[in-house]
Length: 285
Image (cartoon, rainbow, N blue to C red; front, side, top):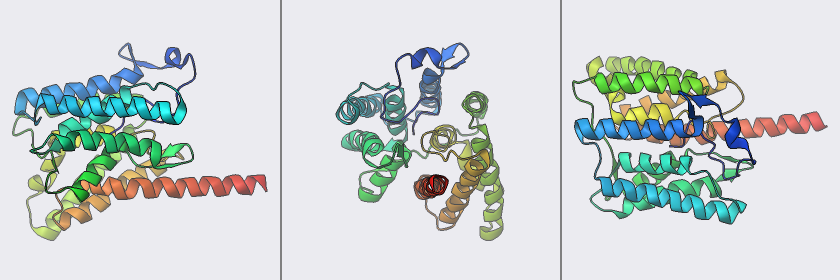
């Protein structure tokens, strides 16, 4: 994940930009997402023990911050704002499941490195933590898995997180992305019940878990890795992510949402980049 409220580009912000940041609840927007994701961690850990351990989560965070500092200096010559790295690191710490310590550090390292290496022009086309998680699932499935714990029958954590999440995504202009994905998820869950005979409640249950709270409010809404052309296009990408996820779930892929975004996100970004460049060439001609 990358912050929904902070730039994730390695290009440093102009001097004085911090004073121009909009605020939510009186807090600089760049710090809202880190506070929110820390709140999700605390709620999840105190109610259901979602973390592998505090130490491994700290390892993931410190690795992300260290790589952000080093790579930003190497590629831009500037010191970065660390909110984005913190979010990537804490996301990896929450979502990673492994009997070893090294996958926590390596996933964070891959996530941050992707921002600086896998770029087209001024854009990185994969969500950083989504990229790191998918790479680890593909290359080290024997040592790496992801969080699958649900909130159980107690829905009060979900209500609190959703209330805050909807306010924050609206503040950063990505509420339509979250709502489109959620509506599409329910639609395709119903479709799966018709195809598989599973109970509807069983098909929609995953969206109530802590993993999906991070996915819905951070991964698919990241301003730096979502298309920029219009809200309609952004909603279309969210719908397509849900569609690909549905297909993967029909093949019983337990990591369906990660792979769906891993496939759809960069394809959508590359198409948009191509169309924008073609339009620019036509205008110049």
